[in-house]
Length: 401
Image 1 (tube, one colour):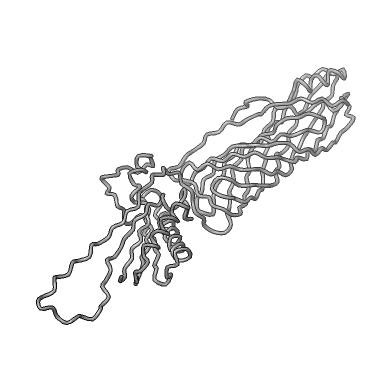
Image 2: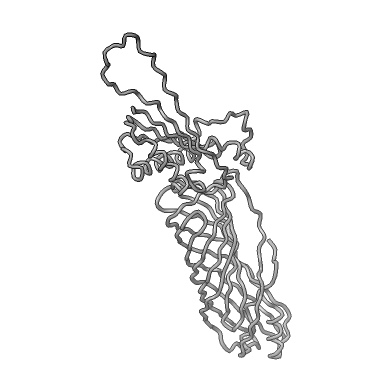
């Protein structure tokens, strides 16, 4: 850990005139880690708690100057510029990238002791705690890991205490102040499951002390986040590669010419219509790792429903497929959600008989590509593009015309 710059909080309490001095940040540098899996976040409520270390730089020169103005020479100053802090928070995730979060924070206690000639000492202590409201942005890096950035406001209550010994005298031993200022920070979020995640954050709180100074208190913390309401769809960075609609149809088998003389007219028997299989790319139907059909996808499904006009179908099979990137459990769930979304659209908009439509997810079990065609395990743009044919929804109709 190291200090990047300085922050001022205390002035000699024997000096009655407030003096404002804007300070900079005292940062703690830390090592960050990465993971081969990607972060999952959906919409809904969540709550969490963080704990860690906070820091501020005590302005020894100002303390020395204040004592000198009262006729005291400072022989030594012991600073208490590090403390323990924590925060409790809750928020609502509006989508994969934006959340609003509010909470309570306690940045800890800071102080100093100045020894003087004539013989005496001056002790100062500050404690900062309060409420905050932030706008939080999320950038997925992998399936389990994401970067977060926040900006917001904090309403801090600052309590100060001053005491002295010997020749040094204190006029105002206690003081309190409430002020609203900005705060911001950066961090990482790692999802262990759909509901439980860990956060590592560095935050800066702008704080006014009780004697007119403005400065920053920084906190580096780690904690746990719990998301309510169960699993949610997970955003994963992917290269969107459109795939054209492919329709595979079996040609009808021609019947043999009638014998001469022609036989009596045969009774009309329904002729089985050829089965129809439509393969639609996941990117053409859905948004970025979502399971809601987008406008372009709705147009393709509407055309498919119109093409069934005049066909008496006995069954329609809807199968969702994914590529092999990511966990099997996640891919299976995503394929089921997308197959269900296609069925819902065909029933509600296409006016097809829902009792004859079966939707199921096949996950990554039936790829179109071969292992030797798309080699590698690490997610790269080239591998994602190569595996694009595997990400699809197939619709097959069986019936009579």
